[in-house]
Amino acid sequence: MNVTFGGKTVTLEGEQVKVGSTAPDFTALGTDLKPVKLSDFGKKVKLISVFPSIDTEICSIQNHRFNNEASSFGDKVAFIAISNDLPFALKRFCGAEKITNLTTLSDHKDVDFGKKFGFLIKELRLLTRGVIILDKDNKVQYVEIVPEIASEPNYTEAIARLKQLV
Image 1: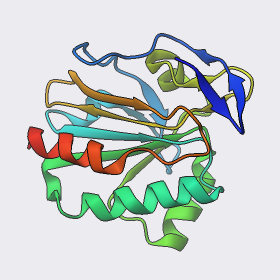
Image 2: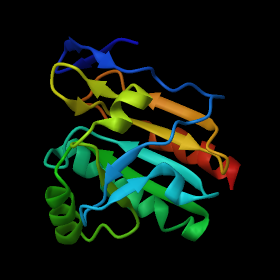
Image 3: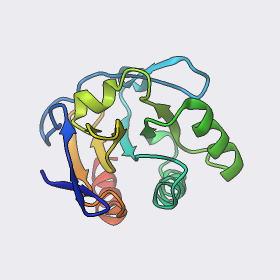
Image 4: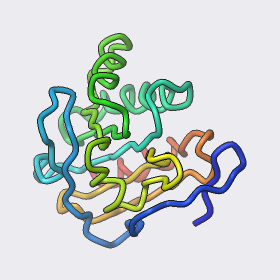
């Protein structure tokens, strides 16, 4: 897949997850600096919102949008937001912006998610922008890797797919 950042092609590392495959377990850091695994979310349907940096406009918009969408799903869906930002930055942003419906995770330490899901940008050590939806058994049901990182994901399509699973 060809992904660009500001019009320049970037290289994604790792094997990109595909619809129909089982999502690999990964470990990232919560905003309390404790490890969090995908398996910690149990048998819930999961939407994973992936973004490069919380301190950019599009990433802020993406997190606000999924935070708002999450409220209509209650506890049926785990909304996970992940980037390579430091846990402190994610905690600061969520507190200041009143983001309460997302579990924010930092992949900065080991880039375990980025490598296992194929979202790690080699040149920047950031995650590319995208959305992944997993069913209750962690089977991949939807994957979007946004072709131009400075663009937003297709929220409408992701939420429509999510509604089919709950």
